[in-house]
Length: 210
Image (cartoon, rainbow, N blue to C red; front, side, top):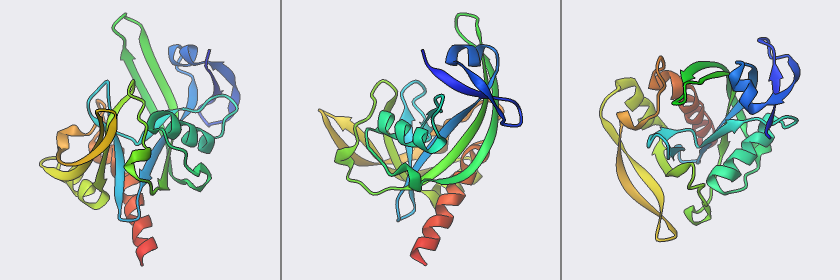
């Protein structure tokens, strides 16, 4: 049984509840969107297994009693298989996320989340990645400036580095990443979903190289 801290609409803590009930009853809770980037201005997107599209580096619910930054470190380790100094992660924004969808069995999944978006400077050889193959197919490393321009155009593609596991080993290879590859929910735009984090990475890397 997974317990989550729950909140009122003003983000005041009001208790804990089972995750299934949180989504059944549309209770406010916290999630974390984890983004890794490097000093060259590249950002890492994961390839979600269930959608086949690009999303955050890692993401998930904040467990009861857990800080957001602790959740950042746990999600990165669970999904990407590496340990990071999560205390160095920097806040981009806290986004109020609301979504309802009908599940295949007819139940309605109700999401009311304070999505905490954080970025972290990261340097590591690809051999250290150990993907959760139940959730992700691999990572794509792409230039943040080029990605931002692609999302503004809403068409075309850019070159990125695909990192996947083949024959038990991580391999990196160049691949064209089309605009349509980015995961966007109904009612969202790619620029609205990813623009702020891309601008944050661009700003941080420019400061570090100035």
